[in-house]
Length: 389
Image 1 (spheres, rainbow, N blue to C red):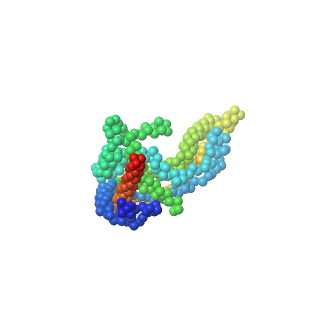
Image 2: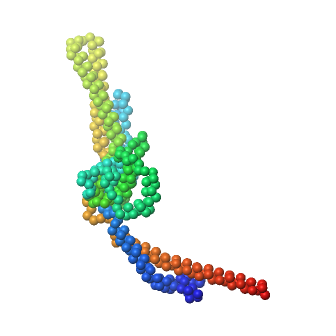
């Protein structure tokens, strides 16, 4: 009994006995080696059957627009003459690069991206991401294993409830609320997991990454995501300037028509009253002349403001300098098979050694309880003998 206690990896003082630990590991070395080999085989299987991924990326430098705050000098007089209240002195709306990742992960952006067609090696003609992941994509070996092990309760629940009716890729929208179908949400999660945006504040550029199971597909998605991101940012940036431009264009057309009518009325009156010198005729001519002059000034000022508004839209349009265009990746980024194998071997060693220590600890605990039980029985017997005597 004392010899067994000596092999326990915990000394009597409560300190870890390193020699005993090493001895325990050496005595169970065959078990440890077998366990490590089993985990190594599992690691090889995981490494071989893990889905392959290729990552395409692009780097851009977002530049602020050239628009500045400016006052519309002739606008106040224009407003007083024509009853138009225009304020061109608005603060330029900036969209910081820190908000770009939120745009990339937004539902409207991802819905628009999944409706674009891309090339897939296992499909004859280009199809949308939504069509591919709902009609053509097949789960891998590990996905099937996970589905029928960890995800088995969900599979059973789905079988009991029955499959929901498959809907189209068109999301419904009530006001500002977007309702996604089940298939849309699944594809949206795939897109969300496979595209990302990194911001390098130190060097001042942003990097968009796209990771999919095919190299060509990764490059195409990265290119389209870059175009959509630029489109979203541009639309947001020039929204107010575009609204101002549309408003001025409408007023310009109205005042142009009024000017042409005043011009035609004045010309017609002059043709009818070439040799008339009466006070009534002169007064009417002066009135028509004043209307013509006012209409001309309003029309002229609006023409200037229209040109300024067009320039402002161009100035507010952000410029993206692509410093690294999208290229088709030549090497896969996942899986990293060597790292996976090393992790599983290390995990196997930890599990095996932990099992050795745990089993030895349990064995020692059982022996300890047996000693206590034996001691209690001996004490009870001695007490019984003393009572009889």
